[in-house]
Amino acid sequence: MTAYISIQDAIKQGKGKVSLHGWCYRERGSNKLRFITLRDSSNIIQCVLEKDKVSEKVWKEAESVKIETSLELHGDIKKDERAPTGYEVVVSDLHVVGACDNFPIQKDQSVEFLADNRHLWLRSRRMTAILKIRSTIFGAIHQYFRAHGFYEYQSPIFQPTQAEGGSEVFKVPYFGGHVFLAQTWQLQAEPAIFSLEKIYTLAPSFRAEKSKTSRHLTEYWHAEMEMAWSRFEDIQDHAEGLIKACVKAVLETNKEELKILERDPKKLEPTVKKAFPRTTYTDILKELEKKAKMKVEWGKDLRTVEEDKLSEWHDTPVIITGYPKVVKAFYMKEDPENSKVVLGFDIIAPERYGEIVGASQREEDIKKIEDNLRKQGENPRDYDFYLDTRRYGSVPHGGFGMGVERIVSWICGLESIKDAIPFPRTMLRYKP
Ligand code: 4AD
Ligand code: MG
Image (cartoon, helix red, strand yellow):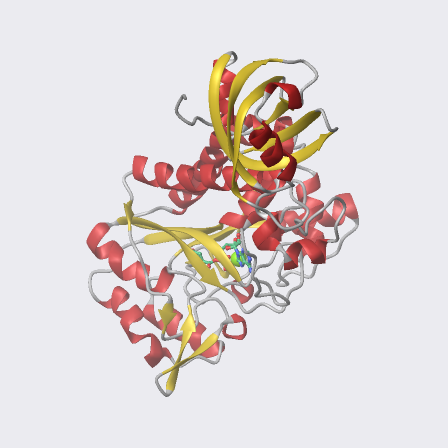
């Protein structure tokens, strides 16, 4: 008997003896011949048993195999044009490892049913493909930051204050008091740039947003960076570089998965090849009015409809700077040339995938930060530790946050962000 190898490696081997283990993906047959399509994490392959050519015991076991039965088998692999992945294993020995009840998931089931059975649906070829791409993207994020001299650093999830808007924060009981789940790593990340200068994280963030959209999760993974001595352009360059790195890694690593998802790689290639357009909020308002007759009052945040319209005009992400101060977070630096706007930017993905990055230079003027906090109904004293970053040797600095599921969603071409994470948490669902 040979050592167990993956289905993909067996296909690479192409001929001779193989030992495989996995789960039954499909099965059919007669009382003389049985076809079992085996799947593992790497691929699927058709396996065939002839009653006359195997022992009675093996035939009996093969007859008991149902969809999702786990099994091990030994046989000879050969090319077969008719088989789904071009190869077939003629089985000589087979052993059931874990018997299977009737598998609840069959063809054409409702989105709700699949969500209820998420723990089983993860095994689908579709989810397997998405999870592989997700893994590539997580790897690419770590690689990008490490290659550019950033240290990996962690902020606490239990937070003393809000950071991105008090109405969207989860409050958690804490020994008679309460804390908040982190919306961002930022307030405890900024103090660390005085130590490490360039830092990043890849961690969960939590938003109690009452949005039932295809873009919002209550728990999502957040790739964030913060750097000392930055110019506003440096933050934009790194955000663009990171997005390019994620797309490039998937195009190189996940051709098969993109095929399974019927995602055309051509839609992603411009992002790697072209520089992202950099424009301003004010120019976007003019463009929206001129090209789409969409009138947005200056000072109002861009809504989904406007972002979607904008994304139709570009085949790469677009960087938008110069947002009105009133719609942005308290820590964003006021533009020295125009006090109505901030040195912050959002990046909007193509194909109506919305905001993928939020970023800014950080305000250094304590008075301005305090003023912004008061306007939001916050007490600046609660942020004293944060304000210390401006008291003791402050330097120009900034950073961004990228929603990883938004990136996964766009790269995979998903209809909903819920499929971009194994167990989605939304306003309406926290199970299974
Ligand atoms: O724009 P946001 O709120 O920015 C921050 O949190 C900054 N503190 C980041 C920083 O400068 N360190 O969030 C950043 C990104 C958004 O652009 C979006 O991609 C994603 O996080 N995001 C969400 N993703 C999924 N579900 C949600 N509810 C999200 N809210 C934000
Ligand atoms: Mg934002």
